[in-house]
Image 1 (spheres, rainbow, N blue to C red):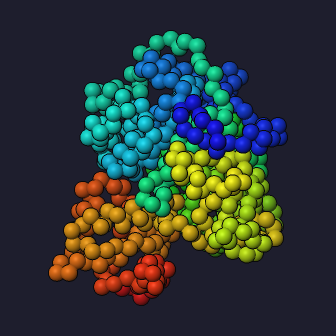
Image 2 (image 1 turned 135 degrees about the vertical axis):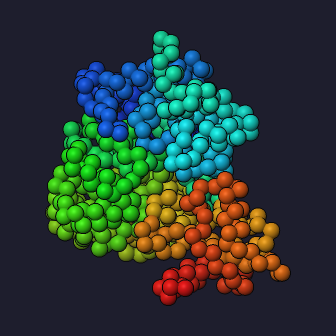
Image 3 (image 1 turned 45 degrees about the horizontal axis):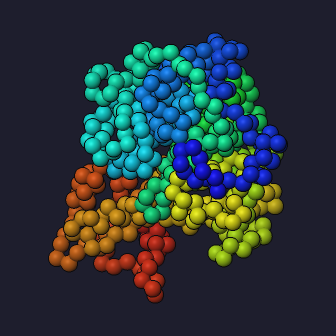
Length: 547
C-alpha cells in the first residue's frame, strides 16, 4: 500500500511498477505532457470534432492553460477533486487537461445520474468543485446542484458549461477562461499519482470509487491502438459517454497520446452515426452491443457499406456470436469482435481481429494480452483451462484500488489480483469466455445497476413487504430491471405507486423496473436466501409466453 497526495491509500507494488516502466508498458507521462508536446509540434492538428466544430491541439493547450490558471486562483491544489457532469462536449477535454496540469483528480459523473447518485459521489469523493451542463435532455442540472449544495460542505464551486443564463451558478467555464490570470509555475505531477476517481455500481447498492493513476489509465488504450492497428491520423467516433472509462480514454485522451482525431457524439443515433462515419471517414469506433446492432440495421436498410470503418470492438453487454458474423456480411471492410474488461481493469482482452480469426472473434470474449489472468474456484484455487470459475486479473492497466480501503481489501488478493466477480473460463487460445456473474448486477446496455440498490428503494414503500430485483431480457439493451414484489397483508400496491416512490427518491430512470411482478412468496433456499436464478428463469418464461 502507498498513500497518495490526495490522502487515499492505493494498491502498490514497487517492483512490479518499476518493471512496467522498464518494459515501456507505463509511459511515465501525463496527458498534459502529451497535449503540450503535440501543441508545440503541430498546433493546427485537429484532436476532437464536436458538433461539427474542429478543435485543434493548439486551442486545447491554450484553453487548458487558462483554465488551469483560473482553477489555481480558486484554490485548487494537487490532490483536490474536480468533478464534471456533462455530455460528450469538447469542453470536457479542457477540464481534464487543466486538472492534470495541477495534479487535480478528475471525477466524471454520467449524465443519467440524479440527486441520489450525484450527492453520494460528490460527498464520498470530497469534490471541491464541479462543472455541469446547465441542462441536457430536458433535465435542469443547475437546479439539482442548488438543491444538493447545502448538504455538501466540501463543494466550494459549481460552474456551468455552455450556460445560456448567467448567474445560476458560480459562473460559466467560458468566463473562467476569459478572465483567467497568468499561470504561475506548475507543480510537478507524478504519473503514479491518482488522476481519476470513477464511480461504478457496487453489489451492496453503494457505488465504488475506482482509482486510476496517469500511468494505469492510458495503458489499455495505447495497447489497443497497437493491437488493432489504429494509426496517427485515423479518425475515431466516440458515442460512449466520456464520463465512462472507455469514452474518457478513447474520446478525451487518446488523440494526444496517439495523434488520432476523435468525433464526439453527444447523443447516440444510429442514422446520424452512419452519416458521421461517411462524412468524417471514421475508421474506428467502440461501444456497447445496442450501438453495433442499430448501426447494422441502418446500414442494411440503406445499403450502405461504410467502407472507411475498419474496426468496431464491442463489449459492456452480452454480444451474441451472430451479431459479430453479421458485421462481416453488412460491412465487408469492418472487423467486429468481442472484448472484456471493466472500469477497474480496462480491456483485459483485446479481441481477435486478424484474418481467419472470425470464429474466435464471435465466440470468445477476446485474447488476453497484457494481463495475467487466473480462473479460481470458490476457495481461491486456480483452475485449469476450460474449467469455469471466477475471473481474476493483474496488469499495468488495472486500477490502483478503491477510495474505500474496505472495498480494496475485498477485491484484491495477496498477490495483487483483482477479483472481477465474473464467471468464465480460459480457452486453449488464451481467450476468455464470460459465462455469468457472481455479482448481483444488472447490465443494462453497458450500464451496471445494483439490484440491491433498487431493492432498498422499493422496501421504503409502505405497502411493499419484500422485493427481489433481477435482470430480465431486453431486445435492445440485453438486460433491464425486473422487480418481484410481495405486498404487505391488506394492501394493494400498484406499479404507478412504486414508480412515484422512485421519482421522489431522485434516482436515474435507468434503475426503474420495466416490469413489476406481484407474488405471494419468493422461492428460497433452506437458509431463507432468495433463489434469484429461479426468478430470472420465471421472467424469461413470462417473456417467451407474452404474459
